[in-house]
Image (cartoon, rainbow, N blue to C red; front, top):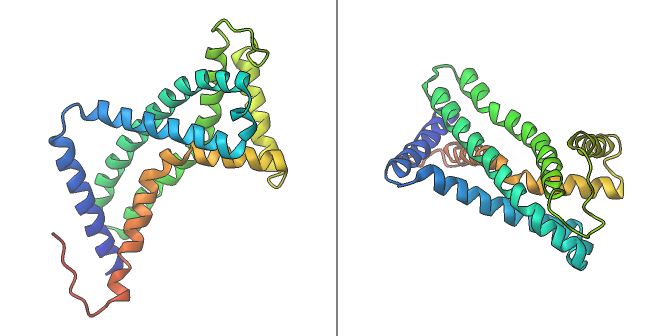
Length: 211
């Protein structure tokens, strides 16, 4: 009964999304721009709360103003792709007859959330590398190879795993979670539908209507 209500809620949400998509001009462009804005907001929010010293430093602030462009664009690219994959998975999940298969399909979003963590590392690595080609007198911008930058960010990730309670590691983890927020929006929608469907048990005498 619970999974049935969950299926109906998710099916209704998918139906409304598909209707909006069919009646929206330049759908893909609008979705991409939406995620660009979300990623840029997350970028500056993460910096302001995790590394406030960057905001007060004119040199570092100028550097990160340049970095935000490839970060927002690459982040939006991943988020747009993950959104497409999510709705493909949802359609297949709703067509399945087995509740176990249904839940296992939706669990794929958890894999996307994990991949998003590594994507954030790649995005910052390649963004810093691209910005290094822009002429600048700043000491922050160094002509380092992409391989070196990848290794540096990978070392930070390993350090965060080995010592998650360290001060610098906690800041890096927090920064990564904020930056990866947009990628887990579809997962949050699934969780919301699952929790919303609990009303079937919380209000057993209420007639459930789906419109």
